[in-house]
Image (tube, rainbow, N blue to C red; front, side, top):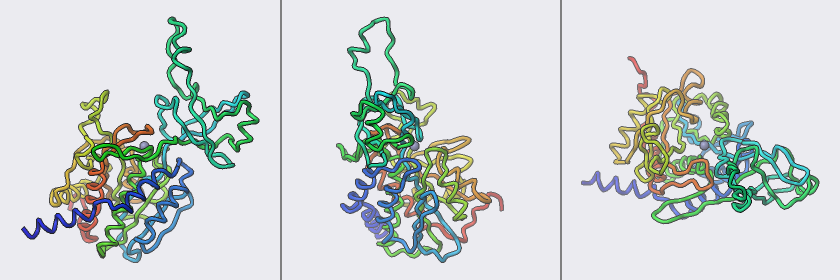
Length: 374
Ligand SMILES: [Zn+2]
């Protein structure tokens, strides 16, 4: 009975305060395109600094906050800070702007979206232009055009290449969607690039909880917000080599497969609101996964299962295969409409994921035996 009471109390502490919600909104409304993550990283560091003993930023912008830095055993909790975006690639004589992908931006959902072009004179407003339905259907013989990288263009109001350049827009300027954070009914949130700023938010909340609950860890905890995941897990690769952690807990988003046109026989069965997803995969360390599973069971945190194969497609791969091999585990939060400007997730899953990472850290002991064969 007493035990049950205690559990309720600890659950309560993970509930998101108004201050946490303010950080969540600010962080998601700050643009953080792949390779140009500094603005987002500044917001993240400002938030997490009071909860950590030390921090640094590596040469490519990965931010690291450390708790208990002198302990020899090193545990990482990690998320990626970058958001998918576009590069300005070509400016036509009549002032239209053609693009190249910077990460897996979705050409199918691009038309008619409002964007920011991050030029040398500050952000410039623009839209993805698209021919009107009337002009597309004028000739019944003609097939409807499909949006593709080579026919998508931005219109910023300029009517010549010179006018585009006057605005500070240049080849290589990055482009992000304007869509921001919003709360909708039944505790769902929408934002562009929850993938994976929600991870950065969650690991920062774990640091806050450890600090507020005055937990003393028997290891050094590295809270890592890595850059350049979306173009091949690069930030994680760099920082894993630098830290040389003993254990890594990676967090990212995963697909809610309960919306139309997704094949569950291929993608598995994951749903928003039913808790974080744990994955089996060769890169995921069996014994570490067992520990997380045990914590979820003990603390009655709901989890959902997935199977992944050759790669997890997340920073888990970078950490697991770094150095001499680093026992790594992946904890993912379910998300609808990944890589669109209306990514959607559920508040309960945010809280459960924070709690699962937090409670797992409290269980990790440097003397733990993680050998597969003894
Ligand atoms: Zn992604």
